[in-house]
Length: 66
Image: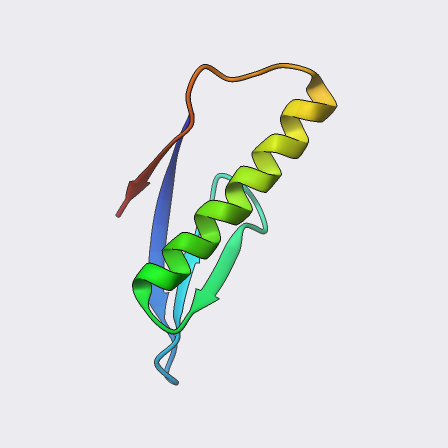
């Protein structure tokens, strides 16, 4: 699996990182790197929950930064 991370910056300076292919997976950070780290961790939790529910394991999980 490979997930595309998109970024946006709020007017207050915070960064938002989102993985659109995983609805609801978005995270805020004071820096772009912090937002990226948080969204990757959240995505892994979501994928782990899906794997557990479906009892299947994907071959690979990769992240690509836009």
